[in-house]
Length: 370
Ligand code: SF4
Image (cartoon, rainbow, N blue to C red; front, side, top):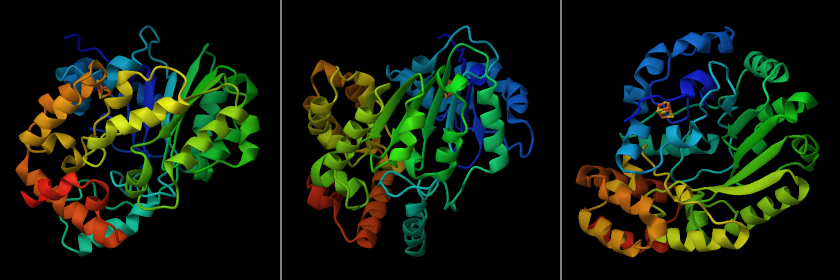
C-alpha cells in the first residue's frame, strides 16, 4: 500500500482544545506550541509523520478504514502537488454548543459538561477523554490565522469549520468578519452545523466565499433525532428548514449532510437516507454513510453481538450500503464494551429523564442479554 499522506504537508487541523494536527482523525497530536507562529512551527512539527505516512501510529483511524475497504480521510482529502504550504485549514474555534448529542462529549459541546460530571459522580469510570471546560480559541491565534488567510497568495484555499456549533461560536463569527474580499473569493468554505440557526447579518460575508458547502450534522429523524440530540426542542424538520434558508440566502452554497454512525442510529439508517433524499437534489454518495464512531469505543456499533451484526448485514443488503456491511464484517464484537455501553446509556437516560428503549426497542432484548 502507498503510505504517503499529504495532510502533514499542506493541511492543518486545529481542534477544540487548540491542539494542532495534520487532520481531525489523527490521534497523536504534538504539545500545544503556545505563543509561536503556528504556520512556521507546523512546517517542522510532524517530520515523523511525513516519513511514516499512514503507517504512523497516529493514523490508526485511516488505517482501519482502508483495511476494511472504506474510503479513508487520507483518500478523500488527497491534494497531490500542493507542496509544503498550507492550503487547507480545518478549524474548531471552541467547544461552545447549544445541543448535547448522545455521541458527543464536553470537548465538543459545553452542554455536555454537566452530564459528564453526573456520569462520573454516579460511578461511570470509562469517559475516554475526561471532562473539558469551555474553550475559546485565543485572540492571538485568531489573529495569526486571519493574517495567514488575508496574505495567502495561492489560487485556491479550503477552510473547514466545525464546532461546537460554529454559528453560535463568537470566535468563528468574529473571524469571519475579518477576512478580506481578496481571500474570500478564492476560498471554499466547508462548514458543519447542527442546523439550529444563524444570525442574518452574517449572510453578507458568507456570500463572498468562492463556494460554500454547508453540511448538516444529522443522525436520525423523528423522535430518535430528538433523543440523540439530547432532548432539545429542535426537530430534524427545523434543521432542514435552516438548510433551505441558508441555501436561499447564500446562492454560492451547496447543501450537504454529515452522518456519524453510532450504536443509536445504526438500525435506522434507511429511514434517515430516505429523509435526506427528499431535500438533497443530487445522489447522496456512499461515503456519507461511512463515518463510524470509533471513540468512545462503547458507542462504536462494531461491538454489537455477532448475531445482531449478521441481521444488520442482511438488512443492509443493497449495493449502496456496502461500507456499512464492510464495517460490520471487519469489526469485532465486544461483550465487555457492550456492558459499558449499557451503563453509559442507562445513566445518561436517567439524567435526561428519557429511555433509549422508547426510541429503539430492539435494544431491550440486546441489553437484557448483556
Ligand atoms: S493518514 Fe489519515 S490520520 Fe494520518 S494524517 Fe493522513 S488523513 Fe490524517
